[in-house]
Figure (cartoon, one colour):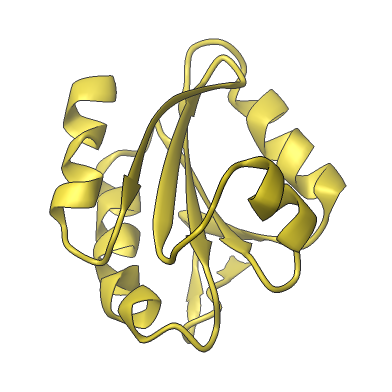
Length: 116
């Protein structure tokens, strides 16, 4: 089980704790799996509100790698990725950015259906 920053544990999303963990998440997905990076902050109310939706989608899309990136812990990576608001959802395929969504509405995550 992996730590969920908003309470409990989950087997479907992982909390990135270092630059190396971020690189490993992208590498682990290889060339055929989509990676969804949920950029959040502990103090962000909208991030907390959308977290159960992200967890539900992670359980639905078992072939997609879902990870959470705390922008306060990994601020350098967040800046490199162009994260300017939270929550931001970044979609990667083959280690390269494929799409992005910002905000706490489910529509930000609906593009997942078109990328899988």
